[in-house]
Image (cartoon, rainbow, N blue to C red):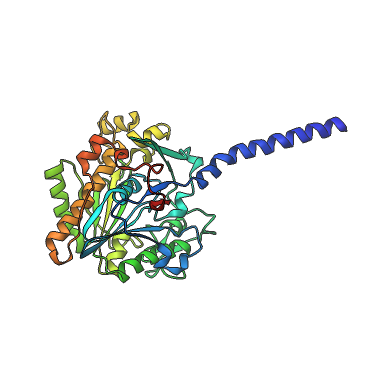
Length: 387
């Protein structure tokens, strides 16, 4: 009897240790605080709950970095991490936060829009918990999040998600996808409150341009592109032509669908006077027929299976042995956004948005994304924020 009790105790202790060992990396992921150094252009940092009080006290509340110019002008909102599994978005947004100086107008940047999803992960798909960007002062560590908000923050999922206000029936999981819950509502599900708060920012601050940053599979037709509704399509076309001619990369224009509700580039244009754009960069990591989902694949975009598919014309972007590295994806996002601001300002000189200090595509590809991140250890502590 005593011997049996000892073995049961040892086995129970082993199970507890195994559970702790398995849980420790997930807990470390959720607790990781990524430091952001507010650059010289950041005049103040608000919270999204300042625009939508229904977020206050929740894990969905997030920082809004505000860069106000020396002269009045137009206003723009930049949104990243709508899907935290598409990291080129937040990296591009942080380049603006840490480097941009606005000369005219105001820029609002939300680098971690679906904060709940950034705290979640997909271990069942063997996704890495973190990725690292090399900088002149060391490696900067980032959480690799999930596409949808954590069920810890919004649960249970409905059997069918009914979009508000159009009542279109969407997949149950879309209730936790902040690119399916626009324009949102103040007392709705948590992710509806996130998008509602952003809509209140757009409407209350009279924002002229909104840009939602994303990434998509190389096998998905809507990738490497600018998605825009009719109201913004002419400007998007000019941007596409200019970056192709001047910076030698493609970013074609895709129309925002009329019949698919909940998308930022659809609902922002329908429920405000803001011109919306959604940018997609290719992310080979998200394609299904790849090798292991490693940090290396996430960063360099090189995969032998995709290379074979490219030879059979199965991909929607050019693909060779160089892959689709992160610097290229981030650089494209940054240059397209700069060109959107430039083209909008040309057409609307009374609402111009002018800024400096931000590198373009060629600079980022040559120098690396990490070149434009500042060392928190040497920064003014009052200028450090956490995501």
